[in-house]
Length: 311
Image (cartoon, rainbow, N blue to C red):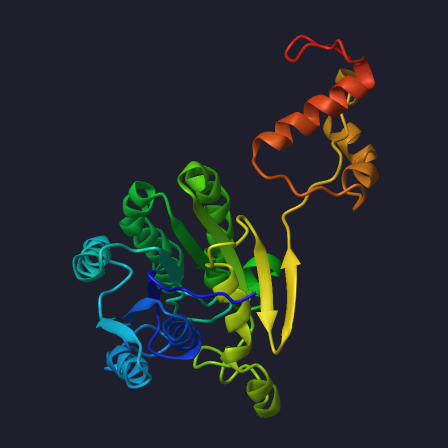
């Protein structure tokens, strides 16, 4: 099976280096016309450079088609302008990879509110802005592939990255709603949790590990998740040649009768409520309510009516 992106227009944010650069290069190799978006600043979000232009030059030198864009994901009007420019030049936008990011790591005790807010603005709000800018186009053309970039910090936590973790788990939540809203328009939305040696992580990895976690090793997962036959609502981890899936899961609900529905009753049942057994990965929030009703019926019988059952 050969996967190509002929006749597709792709936007990659934060594509001036690291992961975004590798995504842009491979998309172009496989036939996509690529908008290389990057402010070119340092990893804390300050400064500017011509990083996007250099990637475009690489793509064009290899026979591909691309254009540079220096707009900021934190400004919605700039994201709208970026999409409008791509549509005017190439007729549509089919793929969006939300990759732009910054780090401002400190323990929560030492972190300023400004640093917390800025990291959320770039990662979470920035991804929402870029996605909003392409959303109506994708609905109209009945085709869209969107990739959010999460992190193990968001999924599982990491010391000193409260701002980053909050933003990254927020992106997984954004994915879960957008994949529902986009389904009837053939818009598929997925989440990638990459582990890569980039300027964002260069002082976090030992030198040998930094080389092992070359960004190029994440590309297969990223491009599959924005391909025509991509799944939707997937959370995929990738790094150093290893790939895995992750899920937001819940166990079976434990339904407490009225006399047990107290703080003490909850505590007495915590071993069952907190057990990692019979785990399921709901595809929408409605399944949580369904699980609670199922547990109620298990205690009171199948004829128990929601809202009228008494213990």
